[in-house]
Length: 254
Image (tube, rainbow, N blue to C red; front, side):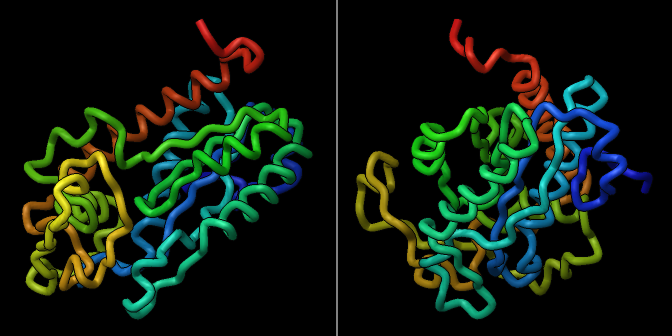
């Protein structure tokens, strides 16, 4: 692999000084169980790869973004009884994000995009608060929820199911255990109708929802499905970065 000046962890000071950047991308994952067949670092691996590939595509279109090291810990309060879970409270996440923003401000960039790869992470309220005190244009996106990118799956699943297993088969097949070691990913639905219908919400007690920490059947997963999803997602994220680089942050509304 050649040098990638859009990935900060791989870039030396001299190279950084030779390039100009429109903004930064902060991948944010989690460290948690993903059924019996995927590694605890799944969200980190996926988010790092999505960020780097999207930034590469944007770079080719002259939209230069610097991908920061992925934050590996997510909001996992409801999984703490599952061994190996590393939880970062949302209040801690807010403090970490504030420090990252302060650092990026010093680099005289225009924007910071938080690329989220974990369903338990929610950054909108943090951004609302932080935006009042910074000139950076702050935004966030959940790369795994981009509309229209999951059409290649019969049932993508919510966690370590067909979609996520396919993606890991494409990105790091050596870290995916055989499907005969995976659980079926069956989940127990809420008894509360409003939550089932989606207009009420409460956090799920994960070990009571799933016997294997998964949510969705992983067995239909294939590397090809993962490759297609990865390409579609990184195209869409790259398009967003290109738009962010081009927009006048003092004139954001049509």
